[in-house]
Image (tube, rainbow, N blue to C red; front, side, top):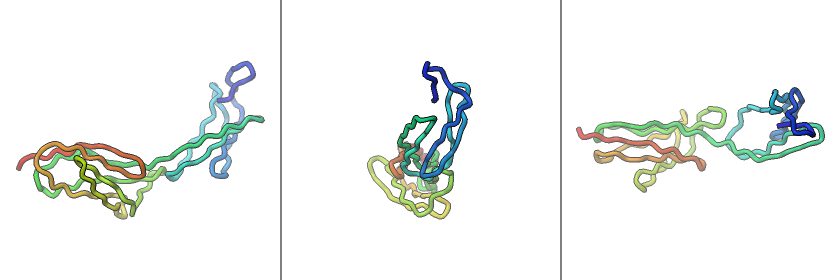
Length: 148
């Protein structure tokens, strides 16, 4: 946010952003805010915003995305639980290890060429919480297993 000496927002002024050595110029809106929307791979970055002689730097972290959904199945019907791993740009991540936790039991599976890690479900009837984890990110779902 760019403010005048009196604290009023400055609209229509150019702010230069630098991330990974690439520079982007954006104009501030009526509230004095300049924003930048870009796609980045998962990781930690330093972003710098400059206006006039002022410069501000911050670290940002781009995390991957884990796509999962609840599962309802019948006992031993062959259903698998699936977790799809995407990078910060929405591309699938093949060949990465995903950890699943069901009731304190951990399973590791590697994503296939479509970015999907599959876990066979062979549990007794009941309701279970499964947590899928990758690169510091965790997502929980429910698995419901019905009697035949």
